[in-house]
Length: 147
Image 1 (cartoon, rainbow, N blue to C red):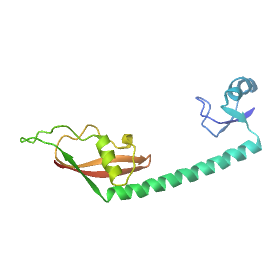
Image 2: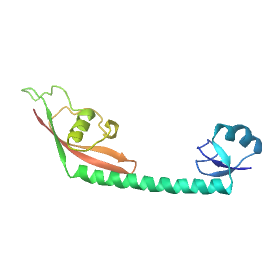
Image 3: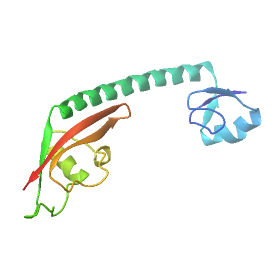
Image 4: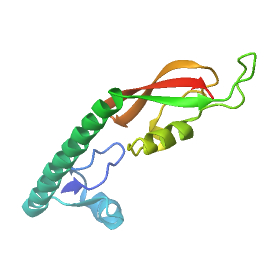
């Protein structure tokens, strides 16, 4: 019996693939759980159309991420850090602070996109990677200055 997988099934196949399984496995396991449907021509056409729409949507998202990457790489942020007389930092600059500074600059990002191993605790110039899309990584320039 041929079924079309609606979800990835371990040791069977990925989403959108047509696989041949025994009728009992399909009838008692895959179909009731909603993991597969019978592979009819109508179902195959519907899945192909859905995949085309998904590819177009992914391309639009990637194009938007590329445009945002170009905007981010053209500017640099200047953040203030309070330091003592011996250049010892009081506090630090975290990913949350960076996202807030970007928001004030007109760029909306989620905090987990900024890859910051540890908070910035010294003055200077830093370059941080920002993963905007699985295929698009922007380099954000941050200048930490004395407050």
